[in-house]
Image (cartoon, rainbow, N blue to C red; front, side, top):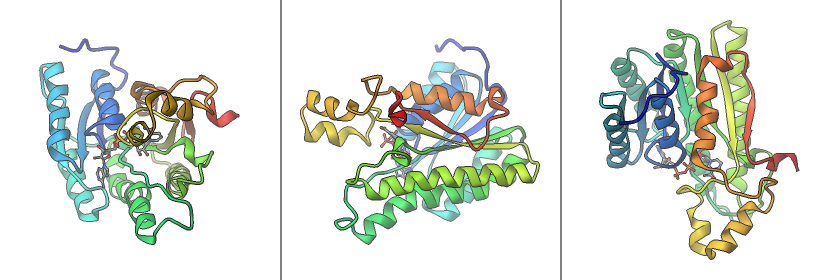
Length: 262
Ligand SMILES: NC(=O)c1ccc[n+]([C@@H]2O[C@H](COP(=O)([O-])OP(=O)(O)OC[C@H]3O[C@@H](n4cnc5c(N)ncnc54)[C@H](O)[C@@H]3O)[C@@H](O)[C@H]2O)c1
């Protein structure tokens, strides 16, 4: 059974999207370990259900629930938020983590690919925040955490739409933060900007290149000279979800081994 750590997010009720693996699963596990109830969603239902089940097994009781959700589906957002709030007794944390990438320079990228990536990475966050805000207002202090990327600041021209989408996430997050501040509601909104972390989204690099070549390429611009780990991002999310960060809003939290500074 997981040893329960300091209850840094005790009483928090968090929905995490894209939680079937990678960063989303790590964030959900981290929040649960520190006292939150978590509601995991993903387009991949069997896998997200298994992750929630494993969290509950670790804790010896139900702290995690799950549901299938395609974050591009507006009606599904409304239904899932209602389900999560009913199951947990409210909603105080929203982690918009689901995201996808696509390879292509501006000329090779098709409009269909552009729309697909912007739909998941940007439109879905707008929808999630739009429909979660009324629930978050009922459960202050509340926190929205949007997973952006180092790509918001440093672009690789082969990832045109990914770069654009992650820069949009940063600006969207700040807009929401300031909108909440001017309404004087106790809801903070921040973005997290990870550099490379070995999850499903990065795996194609390792499939295309040999292990050492992939590692060399991915760590080239990173002063700490190593990839990040999922818990490096999960700890950042834990801090932003907790009331320890109560004066932090409209921030771009870089979890990038120093990459954006050079
Ligand atoms: N891994 C990295 O190096 C890295 C770096 C910077 C930012 N990010 C961002 O972190 C977030 C999580 O990515 P990850 O690294 O864990 O990758 P991942 O591919 O392991 O996880 C993404 C998850 O999102 C889910 N998903 C995809 N489309 C969806 C949809 N339409 N609706 C619901 N769920 C959907 C997938 O099923 C998957 O479980 C993404 O927003 C990604 O852009 C990752």
